[in-house]
Length: 213
Image (cartoon, rainbow, N blue to C red):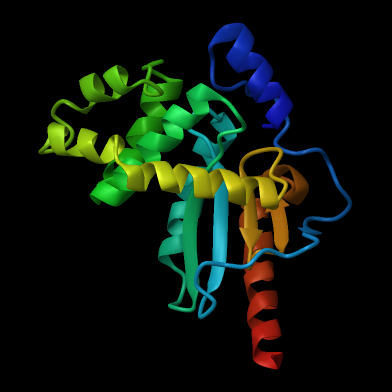
């Protein structure tokens, strides 16, 4: 789903996604090389980032595949999500919920539920009141969760994620970036399964390059 399509829909419809939107403009090959490459947070490990947002149906479809892929990786691979914002208040609200769940240690449980709540139930989880209402019965301490939601730490994570997406020129989701320099997506790789195959190849390539350094 590309950035322009998402933002038009958010303004016109108040919606989060369309299955007809393209993930990324088609490019030659199954991946591209970012120029310049961006530094990673943990130089000791191969970093893999999935850029996404909770209103994107393609992101939801890829989510269980990437979850299983991440669980199977050896210790030299670090996988993480970065939610895109793209100057949208709604996407920023969803990103805030993601980071709060991550910091609070409940992301693995809530992550698939948030996709369903946003896309199937049409819950307004981009708003503080919508989050608070939805959380009832899902976390032990709703008040504590909301304190994290409002925290400076989460705000800093939002800013950092937004800067990273801009630096890596992320114009569509889901997008996968390996080692801060190799970028692929489901559309570039011919589908979600294809994206996982290309991801394996890029991680292996990054591992070889590290061995030569």
